[in-house]
Length: 166
Image (cartoon, rainbow, N blue to C red; front, top):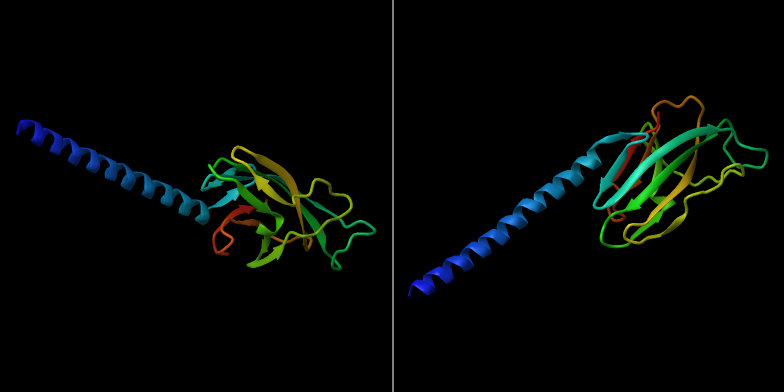
C-alpha cells in the first residue's frame, strides 16, 4: 500500500514539474520576441527574433554614377547588414524582406549602382550560418530619420525589426 502511494505521488510531481517548466519558458520567449518588434535599434546594435539576429553594421550615402538608374534628385543609401541564424532550423533570407522607411513610406531596397559590390540577394542559412551584404535604396538628400525595416514574418507585414539610420 505504501509503495502504491509513493509511486502515485512521484507521477503527480513529475507531471506537475513538466507542465510548470513548459508554462515558464513559453511566456519568456513570447515577451522577448514582441519587445524586439516594438523597439527601434541603433546602427551597430544587434536585434534577435526567434533565433535569427540582424545587425546594421554601417550605412553611407553615395551619388548615382553616370550609368546608374535613379530618380532625378535622388541619391543612394547603402546599408551594410549581417544576418546570423542561431535557431535550430535553416533560415531563408531575401533582400526583398527589407524596406527603407521614410516618413511612414516603405520602399524596396532594390537599387544596384555600379559602384556598390557585395549586394545582399537571397539564400538559406543553415544553423549557425551568417551572411553579410549591402542593401541599396534611393533617398532624397537631406531626408530626416530614415529607417531600415526587416520583415521577420513573410505572412505578416506588421512584424518588423527596425533600425534608425543616423
